[in-house]
Length: 385
Ligand SMILES: [Zn+2]
Figure 1: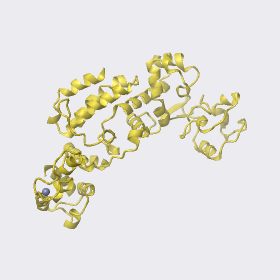
Figure 2: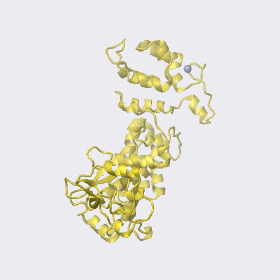
Figure 3: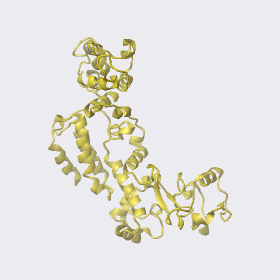
Figure 4: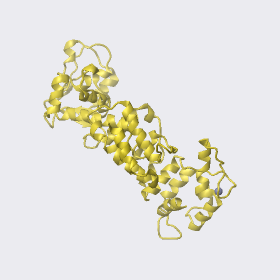
């Protein structure tokens, strides 16, 4: 459904005519918003999710069917949020998971709406959604979707008991760490299973004498450290850890989904500082690419086995690395010296690439050739070099 349509939507634009900054915005607006409608209530098959990512990736790097371009930075880095050093494009799989976590949130907080009542009546019975191991083949696609988003929903939420709390002591998540049942091994006897949280917490504190075993000290500490007031609203209330007001935030759910995924969890993306400096978007994107060592200079192209000589085409005396092209090539040196950087030559020409970009781009020193801060001049100078 989505992939052919997306492809046609993006094909109308000539990716090569846009800068990376422009392609990022277009990718975000087309491939991130269009599949949303479907993704928010259906768990899309992996093949379709991969297809959506492939289209986004090709467009981002300017590849087409006839012309393959190098994808210089891994998709896992590109799809991290800007705060985490990525480009802020969202990958399809974690995005789908985050939207389905939101569906769980709505399922638990819009209890009077028709869709929740229908699904609850059919599948939910007396139990809460995250305890129900329903057979997948018998489920509606919406119920399957709910289950797909359930892990992230559970990780990000907890219940705050209200005055008329009906939270289960064991099976509802009212502690940050998880459900009490998940932390305790071994069987419970039947009466114990039905104990409500409010049966064992009163105004004077915990009363656990009806429980047939003793809790390990660490769990007891965790239980007692959880604030449980049973005041405020009548109903139990869901809260989302990752927003100050406790309301669900899709961005937080996406970041959580990425953190939990093996592909994304392990990869670190440097360069989050780039997005905070004062510069044009195209300049920031260029600096970000430099931080990721992914400008198509000769040394990098040679490393990709493209049979190219690594020598700098300007001076022909040294290999063309990013720092050589931007700073150390005699022609670049001449350019920088004319701008009178507010650092001693030893410092300015002695720093490694990322440190050089970061320190200069954030420098508040006033430039010797104008009244402006060096941190405003430098990024533009790197860009026009
Ligand atoms: Zn050179």
